[in-house]
Image (tube, rainbow, N blue to C red):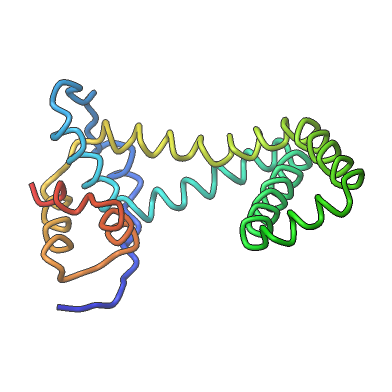
Length: 179
C-alpha cells in the first residue's frame, strides 16, 4: 500500500461529456445511491472537474475583471481582519476602550466598504459557486461505467490515494464509496 498522493489522470472529453458519456437524472428517493454516484464521479473525474472549475472561474473573471479583483481583495481583507480580531481580542478591546471615536469611524468605514464591495463579492462568490454547481450537476447525472467502478475500488482499498479521495475522506464520505 502506498501513502503517496497521486494526481488522477485527465479523462477524455468523449468519456466526460460526449458520445460515450451516459447521463440520467438521479433517483431522488434513493439518496444513498445518489450520494454514491456523486462520490464515485468526484473521484473518477476529479482532474476534469478541477480544470473545469479553473476555466469557469477565469471566464467569470474575464467578464468582470475589476469586480472579480475587488471581490478577491474584499474577501482577503475580511479574512485577514477576522484572523486578526480573533487572535488579538485583548488588543481590540483595549483599542475600542481607548479610542471610541476612531473605533466608531472604523466600524462605519467597514460597513460602507462592505456595502460598496457587495457587488464585487457576489461576482467573486458566483465565480466560485458556479463551478461547484456544475460539478454537482455533472456528478449527479453521469452514470458510471466499468472503468469508473474499477478505478474507484482501487482507491477505496488504499492502493492509490488522490486529492479528491483525501478530501472526501476528510468529509467522512469514505464509507459511501465502498458500496
